[in-house]
Length: 353
Image (cartoon, rainbow, N blue to C red; front, side):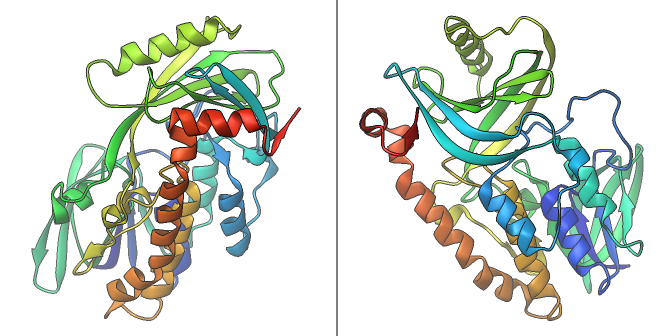
């Protein structure tokens, strides 16, 4: 019998476990093997691996410092914005930490107290209500295991089974599929590239350099034509001089786009959601690490006052993220409406040469 079972050891789940691990008996379930270095350079999480300023700020607030072996070359101080719809291009100053996402996640797990029981290579299968709490079913190395807990935390991302168990598909954020491919690339590219093209997606695409590799990714509407749209993007960018010949691997994952604040769902009873499982992710950029760390901090603060009434306290604290998501949605038309984006880019406001 545990006090708390946390499903997912990404930034949200690992940070929560770190912050409350000395107060509660915790079981942390994670489907990846984050306990050892993966072979090769490429990450196993489908993520661009950039720490945006908001993520840097919350990491500072948590009193953490990023080890240098997590960072990769080059560090990025500019965004090259390519608008294929309007045939425009601008460069804007931005500040990102360019990192290896897989190493970042393993570093967060390495910070956990020894008192936490961690089950890697484990897949959550379901939960049921029992007297005094919940029974959780999961598999560890293909062996089925049952665990009981007073509180369940879903930190299991955009395909959250925890969220589905307690709400079905009610008020779920809009779902996209992110496709990323890694390519060998030795030329210098000292910027992060954001690409807008209404023929490809009503969201955006990205190019990120990492050491001797280049990542091309796109957030696409799920369906039979997603791969066709991605291949069309590659052909268009090849005409601009990009080289996508030496492919290393392909990655994919679902991501949420929270367009309405009611799609931000904190949970019910003694089941709480954090990070992207709660819908806490930027609707304008799909940046999720800062929201994962913030929501897990808010839940940790709520649980450190005790289990009784924790969800109401957490919901109140999450109003800060709700307002942030509202603001991001209000500014999104200037990024995703082709006419407004054209006006903004043609003005040259805040761009650099």
